[in-house]
Image (tube, rainbow, N blue to C red; front, side, top):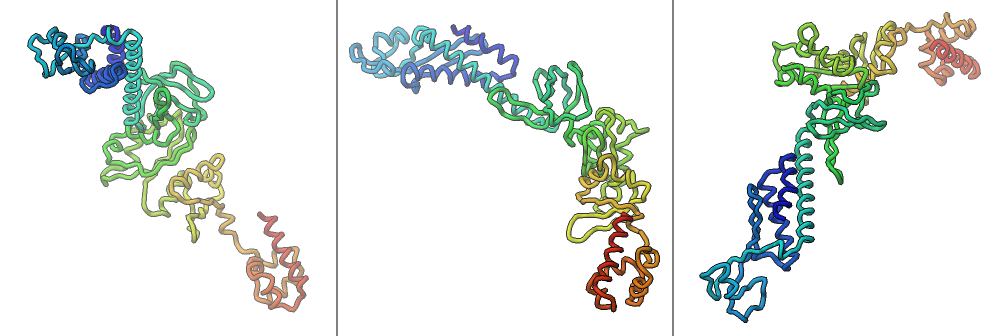
Amino acid sequence: MKHEIVDAVSQLIREKGIDRETFQEIIESVFLSMIKRKFGQSDNFSVIFNMDKGDIEIQCIKIVVPDGELEDSNEEITLSEAIVYDPYAEVGEETMVMIDYEKEFGRRIIISAKQHLIQRLREIEKENLYEEFIGRVGEVVIGDIHQITRYEIRLNIDKTEVIIPRSEQVYNEHYRRGDAIKAIILDVVRTTKDPEIIVSRKDIGFVKRLFELEVPEIFDGIVEIKAIAREAGDRTKIAVESNDKRIDPIGACVGMKGVRIQAVVKELNREKIDIIHWTNDSELMVRRSLSPVIPLELIFLEGGNKVLAVIPDDQIAQAIGKKGQNIRLASQLTGYEIDPIKSSDYYQEDLNLDDVEELTENQVSFLKEAGYSTAEDVLNAGREALIEKSDVSEEIVDKILEVLNNYFEESE
């Protein structure tokens, strides 16, 4: 039976890398619990396990008592019985007794102990797996796809199964069983079964790690990635800074003839990547973040983190990007809410009152006499000021304001 127990777990030990000391502690604790179940206590028992030979010995220390005076067989042994184990045994002394556990416990208890032992080993295996991969969070790994479902992709990495949930997949990437793909270890979650290892191709950390693998200056800390904004599958913006004035951070990331950046782009399925110089100057940082567009002017609005970016008319679409992507990424990268505006709208000339055909000559005349020469001046003044400065009725003032407001609404 002892060899049966050892054989049942020896394969687990070899395959799962459980250390011998841990296994020995477990098997001893399992047998001690079996002893306590049988005898009610285990204080005077000890379990000795020889891993190499597969030998399990149970020893019990008992007090030698005269024949016919035995009161507690768990802690005492008669002299005639003690002499069998130790010819020199004497009354009142302690002696060691070897326990035949197969005979004492019975096969049912031993089978139960074996099952408990295997369960403990599997728990250790699960904990070892968790500790291994929780320490590898943030590492890029390569796995072979062995299952694809509607909700997840399952990969095999070093005989361990990992999962890419749908939320961590890139929308325009498609794979088949057997394909080898890279991903970053995002999280490790304890479950009632084995730990669930979550990997991602969507997380911004994946892009950062890819650059570390391709750019030695980033790996060595000479060039630092200060910020990343990403819409996985379409575009990524990265701000980099060099800790060595002799090193151009963008040039280091691009590499000779673009070989480094091309390797990252290829791994990301041709996702576009914009690399800019990081700076603590907010205005310059926002200006660079809008690459490839260069704004004509930036206006930082008071009381918040909003910025008005004046863009040349012919570049406004490029500044906003497909479905607003470029402006969103620039906002994420800088931390400012960037609002683009056409230069023609921002720099439009004031509208002369004579150019508003809907106004009568008398209306234009009285407005000029009141000190207003442009439509913007009139609207900025407001209704009350116009009434105070003119001889006309309130109805005429309201009509003038209505005409001017309608004019600007139509021009927009």
